[in-house]
Image (cartoon, rainbow, N blue to C red; front, side):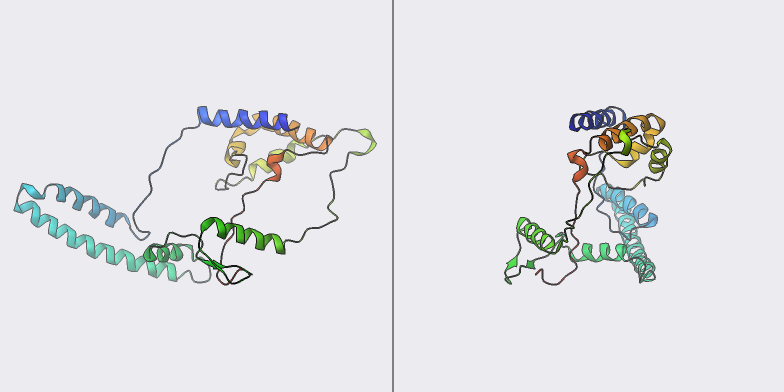
Length: 229
């Protein structure tokens, strides 16, 4: 079972590597409130700055454009904050992104305290402390049902239409799991992907086993303040 899954996974990943265009995107350093007008003036100021040594005419233009840029930044910032605050109770993501940038704090998780009251600042120790806490409150059901073989000795057969329907509902912005296969790739595979998925599911069900990758998950704890006990 494991070998079949790894072969299937490697074929998909190799196809993505060969045929899907890749582009490395640079980090955008512009604040969230920058609009088209601010970006346009920013480019003009940069060009005029490079020409400032050619004479006083260019220096005067540089000062004028710099003032216009400052005014445009202030106006864009006020407009941005006004629009974000109108979303109170609905969406605070943009506002918190703005606050984090203003604070200049790149830490995802601030310092926390463990059950003994010890302050933890090391990223690895934070992760281990949070992991221990979540493990302590995790409820493990002892009566988990295992996959049972099909009755009457008939092998399990996947429903092709169900697989097709599931693939059509995959979201474009879903995160990639530990196996490295994006949901969008499965979706774009279309009809060519369905027979292989069906065969893989049939083998899984009929052998009462699932690949190790399917048991893994990427868990990101969201710290919301307070003391981790």
